[in-house]
Image (cartoon, rainbow, N blue to C red; front, side, top):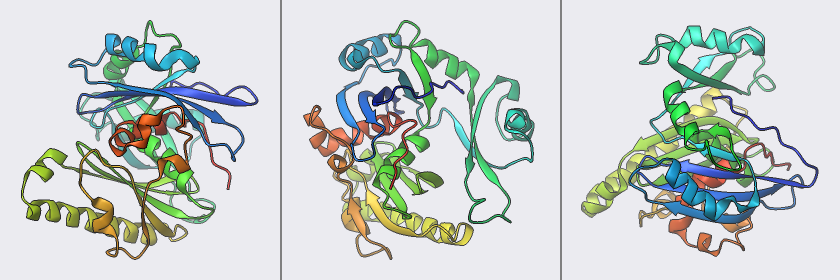
Length: 319
């Protein structure tokens, strides 16, 4: 799972990112990023496929539409194809962390640990809470699944250089939205449910997902929709309280609601029900979308948001 491509070049760089969503859609974007924080990442191309079977042919078809920039490729895994576990950080060298985590997660996954692809990232608390137990995120997926999906890119040019997860992709989006020293909550809607992503200084501190097909929410009566929206509101409020208790140095000062593929009106429902301002995401404020005018539409923004976040791999905003 530790497929990695070091950033290179002195002026600009970029990624072509693919998102294999659980609903069967496949989205791809090509994004040029800059080392200069005053320049917004530029979306060069975007395309999607609703192929019945996601695989090498779908990759090849999309690559013809978005691969012209020659950037290395990254793939965001579908939710449900991996696990993110919060684990104590063992007092070992980084080079020994993989072995330590494998021993720890053996009883927490449903397949032999020898068949697991494993990656990890720290939850940064040392600067603010030096006496707190260190923790990290362990990301686990079956090696067979990773090998299969990497195989889709076997004949792709440029080749697959990284595998990402949805949590880090949305973290990257939230990181661009943050103001200096601001804790931020990003709410995003997909056909499968609603994700809450909470970040501070570009780092992920909490992620929550409410699994609820949007077609079920919207096909019912108004009471069902309101009940679901109340559930989302309650989870966001409880998440903010949890962050205050566990990470008191993080002050969530805004909630930003991403575009929705459906007329859910989540932002309108949240406004006035939370102790912080609620704003709608203005994608054009963080990306240059002039070369991809279809991204002016909320439905398209929702479809490509995870891929756009994955294409920000390695980028850190300077405020």
